[in-house]
Length: 252
Image (tube, rainbow, N blue to C red; front, side, top):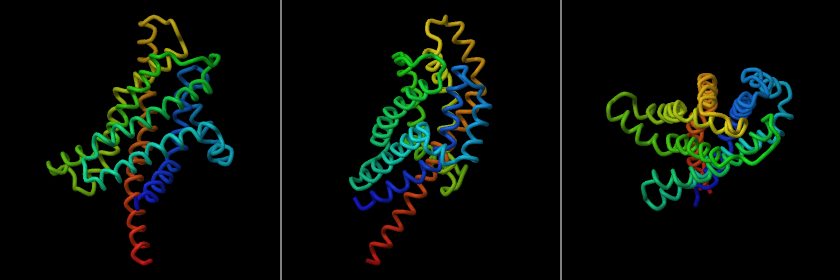
């Protein structure tokens, strides 16, 4: 396919754009949930390293995990779009299946690594329930990031709420943010099952209630760049790179 270089380039550039911020928030949420370091202190320390010693930050394994996660997710979405465009088939279901499969696989591996790196208990296998909660959390995010926006944008356009030029970028940011209201408790419960096994239900509910608002705010800050800004950037750069490729082809 002629569009593969554009798919790869857009995915790599978009992943590099959002990876530092997402890495900092992910690390801080897990460090806070485990009791290793307070959320805002962890965010402050990580941003300081990014600004003062970027060469050290960009070599850290947590950055490599996040860059790989979103690079592969964006690339899968782009390649699926390209194949569906060539085959002239609707891309809603194929895009959800391919992106969620890749995102879930890499994200759960990333969460396993982060939970071990930034937890306070000795490294141990993640409970099955934690895997299941992380999978449900990520499925919701992927679905609202890649499959819902085209339909939501059409709905917004048809009702003259936003112009066609603004509708898709707006819903690409709004949809994955909105679903964090539902998915944050899944994330917190998954972490708590790992960090504090054999706790009563009341203790887990108390933990989620205590951490919900600041964790939801942090996940807003994480998902906004990752699937909102990153998604908009990926779509924009893919279109630009495709146009550049066509111009080079016609000039050759």
